[in-house]
Length: 499
Ligand code: KIV
Ligand code: ZN
Image (cartoon, helix red, strand yellow):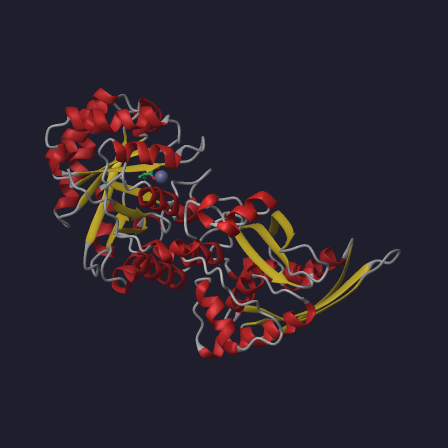
């Protein structure tokens, strides 16, 4: 059996399916290039039939990266495979990922079909995909809840049809680690031809066992792991790349497998994903959480100061965590800002850096400590430039015993519009003014305001979801003035409307 463990990253496909985490093509290319630097073997770049945006992203990522295999997802449907093959046409190494649900739940309720017919459909899809590419991965969706004997028949048929990789997803995150490990072992022991393909794990985290199940799969013969950065993914997420990579590195004696991951790129990549997707990493997240290396108790601090290994099993430098980060203040120069942004995974050209630097100086005048989150927001706030609608000005008066009044000026495709409105509070007044200018039937589904640290001088982050014309749109705004952040988030949503 191979002593190499392949990393298949699905941040741009399963990860990107999370509501509110959608990226545009430019952002996807930026992330794909970072994944290449990180050393992933396969990038699942999207589901091309699902939308023109996904098609374009798969196509552009195929052009942008060199070493990783670019993979496109399909259902066991010929049209999906045609479109995937077309989207992959520029990839230097390409893979089609096709498959079908194999649990009785899927067969009966999703497909209203039979076990035999499902095998036939899977086989036909693999054979068809092989007409376009040499590398075809077959997934047995909900394999975690598929009876092993039947699963072995499905897998054997897919291998005979030409599959090169066999993906065993625990789609619902239901399996126990020993159960999932035993499933992989069962396939290794009972499927003819299994030694000629790579078995892949694809675990979801609904019961918090995705990483444990993935490792159980690897210990029993799987040689590819399907993972996402920060463990993002539908519902409770997917197995996180950084956890599996560091488990394999830390337990090399028990898991003597080579991996191509450059672990020092883990932190910058984690931050890039969190930044681009506006998805904060939980502070106690293993490996990449803000507190993962923060020792607060006196006993721990004392031990770590004497010898870091007393309480740390990973050297922070191994995951690219720069302990000696220079503290940024109003006296810091552009070079220090650029260096810190790079360590956070943000690359800016000179013009953008100049703008962000001016914003940074203004913030540093107001705040004693400019945190990394603040910097990411400053860099990210830049994303509003070049948008169809931008805010020209906003003025609000509010107080106790008076009705709030807002006047707002918007620039819409180069033309200036303004309106004034009253409201139950300053945010409501500002949004009412905005709705007078943009008079469309929009319904607010969600509105949250968060601060980054704790001070009254803090940046407020606003997340909004709007329903408009049958679609739900997500917007983000960040500003030291929460009313301005709210209007920014609203405008960000509207800029994403498709018509
Ligand atoms: O979770 C799952 O089963 C999937 C497949 C489409 C691979 O994401
Ligand atoms: Zn999945």
